[in-house]
Length: 288
Image (cartoon, rainbow, N blue to C red; front, side, top):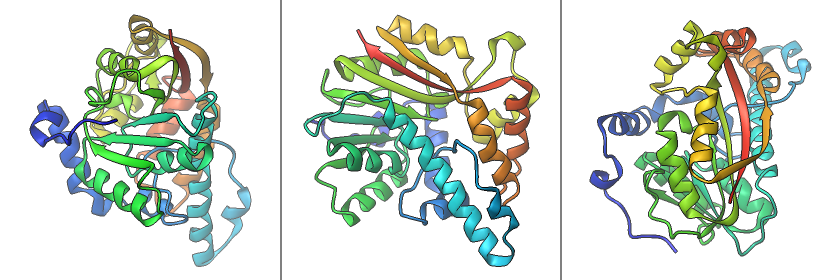
């Protein structure tokens, strides 16, 4: 059960939210990396990848090299989404899930294909919502996978209606206490929240130049690692799995830096990961 459609006035409540929505609504034509990678199999993601890449792609020459690089980068980002889904716990076809900050819907479609369940995605970008709903219709799953122009801080979903909620590289755009309070409200008792995110290292005493560069590039607000655990505890979400994915994230950025899709931000990620000022975490937490 979902609420009536929301309007821009109710969804976009701050200047910052309006700026983020405008970025995705107005710059999608230049979103080359996400679009080209998604074109491989029509699973369009808005996150990065994990795992070792096949070094053979770098030994290929000419146009074949670029095509193989794109396919390999897409394989790594889909592997990241698969890992997130691995941690959702037992999901049955009758369950409903929430993809908070769903982008073009890639992970939502993967969840439906794996579990056969219903998925609702929310995004503050009307363009992303329209694109994802178009994909759902094209693939014939729009009766199970739906995307809504909503704010993840106020989804309008019925309390206790979700068996699982996830965020995939979206929490750096929101207040964690507000987000986790909303997720806990939407989750059924014993339901699970899974988060994959980049976060800054508290022990460094502040953001490094590399982390600040990432913040500026994406107009986001990277939270310190401790903020996640404080906000989870404050909202009745108990971590059951915490995995540092940083070593698994580095190969993706090394490969992307050597591809024609490099945007210049690759070095900031590699520097931040390797100097230890930035971590790539997976957190799975149950609603108690």
